[in-house]
Image (cartoon, rainbow, N blue to C red; front, side):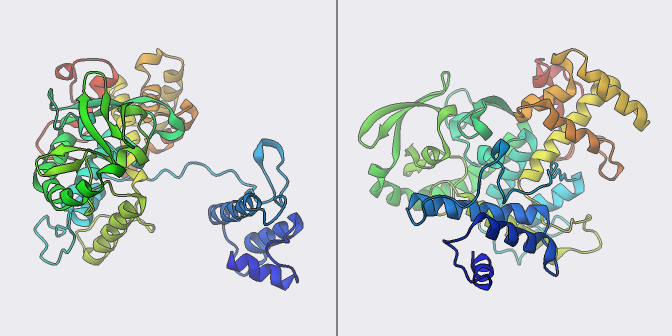
Length: 416
């Protein structure tokens, strides 16, 4: 906004009297005329700020109307003229282990304890990464998951977990989520080793704030409903319909008193927010860069995002299902022909559509973009996640996921 204000001063105008011509001139300056023009992605973020500012100015009655005219399909003078494709970034096995164990877990590159590590919650951060990469959930979905959804702390806890997401999903689109055994083990380790410290330290604070919280009195695992008191009124919620803001203030009576029902906690005893998870990720990246040596896997120019774990899940599952259907195909032309034949095959056994449903994509066209990367020789996925989580000699967790996708019993799914 300061940059735009300076631009307006050069035109002998101020920000609130800006016209559409001013905005078009500013966009041209930033994207074409300045010494180093910004790209479509950077301008998209900047135009969004300008758009939000003028929306706010109208709401507060500083101006009568926004200076931009809305054209077809909601486009205006600030909209980027180029359509960006999906920014698909995925990790190899070596890259993921380095990110999880060295960056988030605080180990040395040789998988030894790192005495210089000063982080506070390596098990929590590693559990979040394992849950994301083995379930395909978006950040807002796995970071807000509740203990009963994973079967932790309620009757009927099993080695695997399966639940529905809706309110935390993109566009509120409901879908099922399956969490395999190895990811559950990582989460359970965090719940045993670190989570009690958070709950014990925050119990008194939450007790003083209980009137601001949703205090749970009863959980129905079979129906997915939670009973409790919110704002002094007895209420019942379906877990899948609980938005993030409600999940954050949901507590129940635990070993040390009131404790949050969310799986992942921070020092305040409640669910970490977006800024907190961003800070954990940035600290992990700085740690990875500082400890990088000749044994370090190739690191990208830009630091990894949490969403890259979802992309990794999609590509890993898609490749695995394709190989389970027809076997590995070294010829790229034959692979593309097989991709097209899947679209006209049986919907239930179409790997592309299975992955699309698991990711909650509105259209298979979105998932189709991943096919470009299944032939990427730089990131081969031969073992279908065997060794990614837990014991490297353990079962291939993607066999479990594929079994669920095909509606088979876990014992009948082969590793291939």
